[in-house]
Length: 331
Image 1: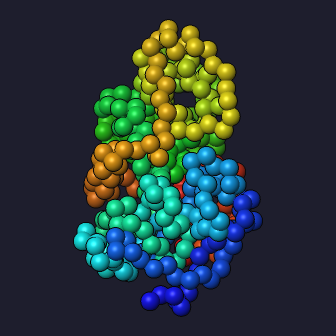
Image 2: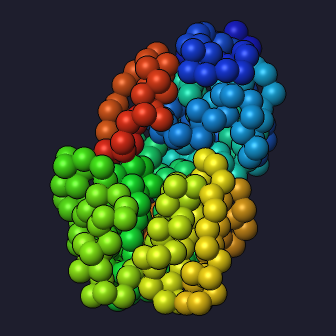
Image 3: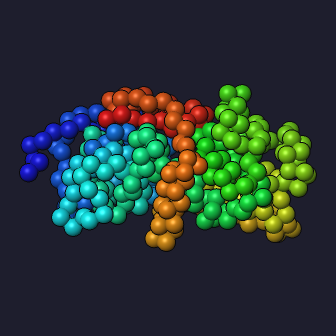
């Protein structure tokens, strides 16, 4: 039925870098019985989508050619015969990290299985919905399903101005935790405080432990959220509270650490990766994120919002800039 319809999309025909992101006209996808077609209003950009471009990303190596993109929000335009939980016209958001072989979101329209589509509350913008896939689920997963963060505890969030970090600050504050966030710039430090954190400081180093000790009454944080373990893990082990938990979300290389720091103070080092979410994890996180949206507990911080045709420039900047909100593409 749609074989002759065309739409705009980003296509990768060869692995490489951002230069291989081609904005072009392609054939509009058709839906199956259990799928929906979404007219995308906003598309979230994630660092791991740059890794996918290389063809060496261990979590997902797509077949060429492919359209990249995991996150987005829009309006349902068409539903399959077996879909009963959505209707045409529904506002929705999607995170295809659960089924990475689905249509990529860097497109005017996307076809996905209905079980990875979530309703977007009326009080949330499409841009905010597009910021909730990987960042929202990652923030919820690391805080509540891995770190088991509790009210009254202190959490230290490295890089608290990025897409995951900003949501993690908001989620942690919503349950009564004390939040310390880091940034490398004065602008970032102010943004962390404006986002609701109790304290903001420069990235942890050998020279600012006294500042962290002041914020934690000399005992260290209960939880550390670590996005660059190859650089910071040894420092984290020195800073964390006895019986504390360090959640490793990212690492770009290996690191030597002192195991005695772990065993002498009963420290837990936990890994967190979205592909390992169980169905129960996903259901719980979905309910939590939607409830937080509906009650204005979380408010995704949006950075730049640019046309989909500018995708190369966004990815050129993606791995070099220091957070300050979610980058959004507009189809």
